[in-house]
Amino acid sequence: MSFSNTPTPPYYAVIFTSIKNEDTEYEKMAKQILNLVQNQPGFLGIESAREEIGISVSYWENLEAIANWKGNFEHQIAQKLGKEKFYKSYKVRICKVERDYDFIGSL
Amino acid sequence: MSFSNTPTPPYYAVIFTSIKNEDTEYEKMAKQILNLVQNQPGFLGIESAREEIGISVSYWENLEAIANWKGNFEHQIAQKLGKEKFYKSYKVRICKVERDYDFIGSL
Image (cartoon, rainbow over all chains, first blue to last red; front, side):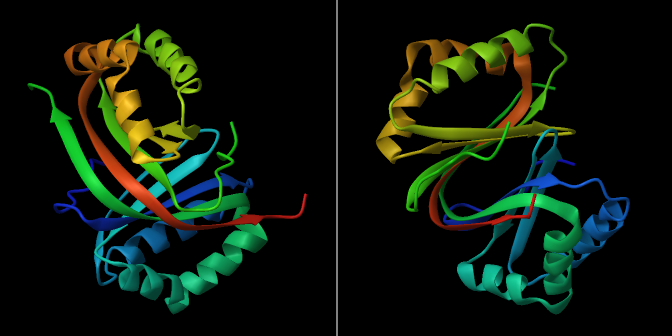
């Protein structure tokens, strides 16, 4: 995994922070959703890490693309399972990325 | 660690994604910076996790608070060490949080 190769701002970010339940089927579902989101129109990239809490930041061209992803049929099923089984709690923040910069060290 | 108890939007988020070098002094510096940021005016909270990449999202009242933190003297020293020692690469994204919602499961 590397950083998402996002375009020049503005673009959008969805910050999804979560606390998981123990559930063996979670990984399988997470992999399916990752495959699905990558084919979603307007999707720009995703960055994820989990320790005590999980943080997944997905990047999007615009708010319409985010709304379409939220309404995607298979994603809706995953959202339902997320509430019933996979997550103790989560928080979703919809953001407009206004500015970005990076540092790439010498190799 | 739990989710940051952020106010009703709008507020701001700084998404800091990074790939670390191996360095034994990193943890000490990270702890110092975490103490420092929590006393910064306009700071609302921080959420962090690291696997292959590290993601730290800090939340702020406004852009001025973010600029003040970037210019903080001790933070500037940390930023310099970050480039020289601690990070292979990083990316910073400054975002306006426009909307948020959460799910809290039954206990």
